[in-house]
Length: 159
Image 1: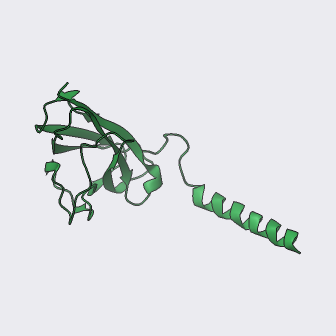
Image 2: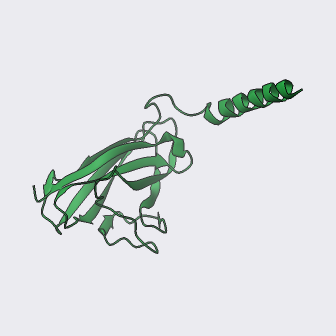
Image 3: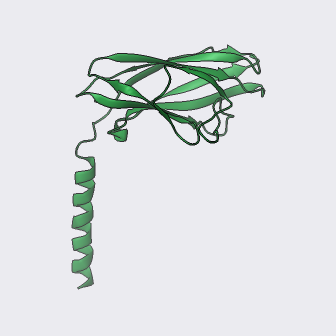
């Protein structure tokens, strides 16, 4: 009896995994194309502009575009977690996001038609610590976060 239950649960689990992943693009197909321009070296405490270019390869429209900052390993980040939708490491954003997460590390922008490209610039205050500082920045459509694609944002402070 226990064997039948285990087999039944395994079949249900396999079916759930198939259903959950059947629309996830293989490899980079369907994932936004993201690139960043940012200085390789920066002075401590300076303000530098990170310019992200995001292209929607399709299929279909991205109803909203999200950019999300995350730490990279143990290196100090450029953008640390903020509070109450404010982030002291972010001086300005162009264009203004439609929404900002409570921690001020996830930003929602207008949608993007298939084949179209958008540019988003963040003026970022560089940390005082010398050495490599970095973040991972991920772009994804709001309706399908599994279509995410990331890029490393990095500079050498005082280098």
